[in-house]
Image 1 (cartoon, helix red, strand yellow):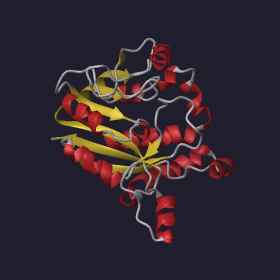
Image 2: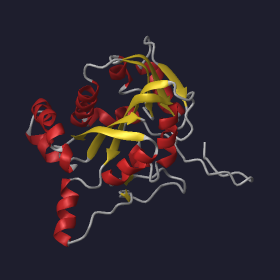
Image 3: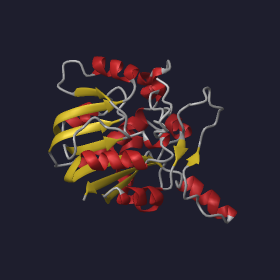
Length: 259
């Protein structure tokens, strides 16, 4: 599906199904065990001791995090725009009660105020302007409900140090991090965000920050070669809260409350 505006001048739909174009995302984490487990550590920390009725993982791909969410919620739905991802999820989630629905994050197939928990992980780096997605997440959450949104962080430690050395302020707008030319005219974006800007956008959608964690703080191919994954994760677990104040890591997890 290639989303295009129609003759009535309606808002162009965002292309959210690029993973239907022959890309097997199920292999993405084969060499990224550290990143995968670091994200699970963050979610467990933010949800520890809590229980939810209905939860949805927005843009959850092939269901990587759905089984984890099921430990905290009685009903879990994988909400994903890519049919190939959903086909892979059908195999991964076979024999579970996790539901699957094909839907885009800016037009969610859920009723108003119907969810107690929403997660959206590894989606923001495809959204230069996430305002429609934030509005939809706010719409489907019950008052007082929880959202956990992961943000690809442009203001991580290395960039902050570089910009400070150059005497320049960090950009407040999203920054494209695409390193190769897009292979199709409507190719999905790859951006990093300014965390303060995103928190402001979330507040405008009535999603108020409660906590944040700095995640994947040791992301480095050299460290992966030098240290066992278990040792890296033990350090990661201790650092996520400590480094959150400075938005140190490349990935920031935000826990939000619907007003």
